[in-house]
Length: 130
Length: 333
Image (tube, each protein chain N blue to C red):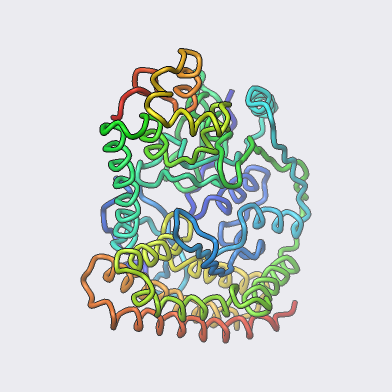
């Protein structure tokens, strides 16, 4: 690719410019800055679309009383129960249990704080789906 | 404390961190040279390994290997440690910074607040260099960014101790012994030979040129095998692996071309310039592939015809690369 053909399609990079390699008129490679490229923007957008759908589905489940807010936070942070177990120090089995609204409602402050710290949010935020 | 550290923006984080660290230790080596000597170029298509439910395509060798190969080929000693304790990992970082050494860290992109939100997935093999501490914040040279930036203690701890696939476990590294005189030539030849071997000779049809053909054949069947949305998601994943941060365009082909040009000058072998030219042309075809694939993802092309077109472009890339690496395999000093 030649230097003056390097695309500058603004999109997902939010103004951050990254480097790609392109050739000058002698065919020698140099570093060129780019604001992004349409195919990348499309691909990245659609990847986020999938994640956002999952988050929304989880939110609906929580609002319908079919799952605890923990499910929402799992999807929002794109983490598995296993990862949350490692981050929080709470066992995988307990996490599955706490995904039920009734079990989550009975959690003591200490456990809630553990979850909140693992997810880098406050206990109040943990109980919400925002 | 703060170390005088020269930050150079690069396309790929691992090459960039290595190149910047070695420059600090008075070894001037460009990003393409790191990539080439470390035999970074590769291809694998693993349909049965799923990432977020999508098959894995990769245009490079495993994270960390480039650095390993570069240091062994140039005779550089690296001190590298992982940690169980977060506190100890941060204390060790501070101690090394106090000695006046910049430190390479393995981090998760998800926990780096200074990156654009859209890029922050759970990817646990992002390399950054920390070169100082100012008012309780760490000074970061992130190779893919234009400028250096800062990060909080807590954020850095989270990034260093992210969980999931290939957890970084607080890994930190820095060169300890960097020889003063160098002969790049044997290292370059070794690097090229290994890349050619990797691309041509792996006897499993998932890797190298055979892997590209395999992807081409599978991709043609996606619209029949999968529903339209999934087929598009599969395609999107390939585009992302090829073009998203880190590859320098065309799935590392352009960086590799730049490396061949430098290699040609070092080795005084003009024929490498011609091969570099061929690599550039192939890289352009990879870009065409991404462009057409992007159009399908956006729903601008009629799908049945276009998957076939994509497959043909890939087969062409495979043929071209087979020819390129067969030539490169024969390189001597």
